[in-house]
Length: 216
Image (cartoon, one colour):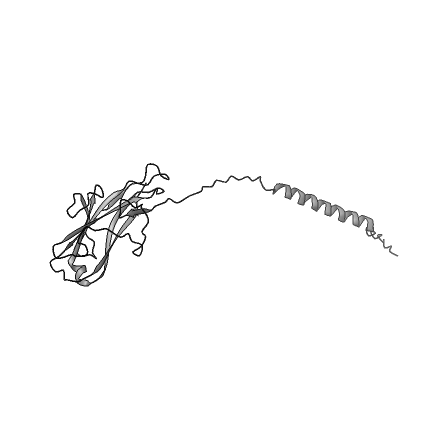
């Protein structure tokens, strides 16, 4: 009769041992995670900042038609300075000439010099517009403005509403910006009546002095 050996079964781990193994596994995992976190720590960071503050410059021309009147802004045709022409401007006839002075400068706060050109418009009777021509001459002073002045011609118009042969006037900034205005430039506007001018006509001419800022 054969004998069969019966191997005793390995008893299952006790509940306490099982808990200890789980705890060790968790601790081991925690150690691995801890080492990984230490390796991937971010480097130190530091920053520097720099900034600039920028202000735009100032640019403004002003004018006067009267040497005894302060310079001021005349920014549109509504506020245009009233020119004082020599005798007969209101009683013109063919071949007649009249003249009026005007002065320009940069105001005391301007930080850029100006190049000034001229444009012209006219309202009123078409015959008078086409029969009156003009020339603008740069002269030495208000007193130097008359119907035949000596100076540099800066603009001409064959009619009151045209502008040709412009030579820009250069206005310089003051040597003491913020305190003194720029040097004055004097202009003489001469108007001549052509042979086709008819009687009893009225026209209003407006000259615009267009300033463009130039490099300081």
